[in-house]
Image (cartoon, rainbow, N blue to C red):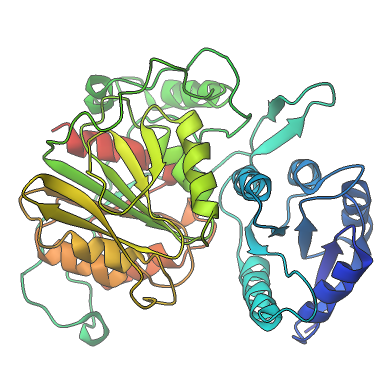
Length: 453
């Protein structure tokens, strides 16, 4: 089998050599070409037709973010961004992930840095997943205006409209064998598939915050109302809605942070590769009066999670923050676990609080989805809703199993058709404790339905 063809893009000849040498250490890859700026990258993609690209963010003539948008528009292929750790770099990296980049790695500082081998191993791991993963999500095409900093959205590719799958609502028995010992899932899918609910299409992270009118999110009542349109009319309506633009939240729309510390529901979401785009879709679809906190673990290094929270906060009607240790948990606030720390839900005499720890990695990650999910097990006074979305590995499977056994109301996994990487959801589904499997654009409505019951 011929090696996968990789294009390396960086304005520094020195860094192009370092990155190329790291990649060719694995015989599955070959460097098909290099480019020193975004314009050359676009031309090289057309010329060499690589299987994947490593793309630097900071380059002359055309930077990596601008080049990525053109590549995703004209010939979408997996792109691994190389990012520095400055505030601007982390912010642009989050944009790149929402604009269609497959993943990112921290750019090595030099050939003699202590972590150069770790960077190389991580890059090869991500490239292997990227070239083997069939892209299911529609690529969000975004075109940067040359005359301003605004971004003009391009119509996204179509996505297969699969109906959500429901599993039987019978809760699992309290005591069962461990996952590896069970031959069949405890919960079997029902024979009849319910009709998919009409939901908003994938949001487009189309532009940075600007002063523009907020497109309102549907009120909970409408989210709970079954669609009355015939299938053809509903499909036509959904197609029309896909051309609408989600604008950032404006002042006065959001609930003041930390004002509702009494709640009956708790939502926990775990995701990894492809997560920033998936989180944008789900979080930005929740209404401002959502009566539950939302705890999120996104596998991501320190500093990047802060930029992710800021980016989501600028578009969402909910408050989105990077969690801090000991802060009081409030309804209507989304808490992103900071990179390098596990996040748990704790409780004292004054209410629920965020608890951050630096305990050892779980499933190779810190933060870990399992750690978050397991922290909810003892809080059975709350109606708990667990969601696993796109990502590689099996983080979250054990925690979801234990939540289901302890009586969680909702256990939801993103369906294969919309996952960038169908790893974490697949493991959770095969574990037998996922009751609901949904395309990404249906998950927010499912949560609204569950929480507003």
